[in-house]
Length: 140
Image (cartoon, rainbow, N blue to C red):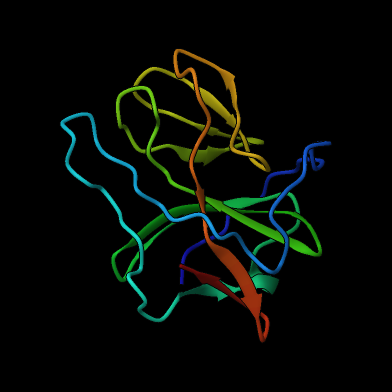
């Protein structure tokens, strides 16, 4: 089970994905155009751990069973996930304090919405399907 770093962040005023999850399908590509992660193709969702182990206001990077995502819990009722692929040049972002940060060129993204806060990236992170069932975070 991944370690969950503790950060604090108030939810943004923008709408966030709720416990029902998102219908978006991840289709991000690396800088060379090769797929880095993909849709679950109808397979079972990946169990990313207990929602109780992800403190409110924190985030974690998940890389298991073919699924790569960054997952945050903006409030007690909500879990959101995004592709970890920076839209600038395809580097993998990671949770850092109250943001997702790209280690290559320091683009910063909102923990709750995935929107770009500072560039060079010009667009935000792609949403990834996330839900909570039986107290477990499910991706895909």
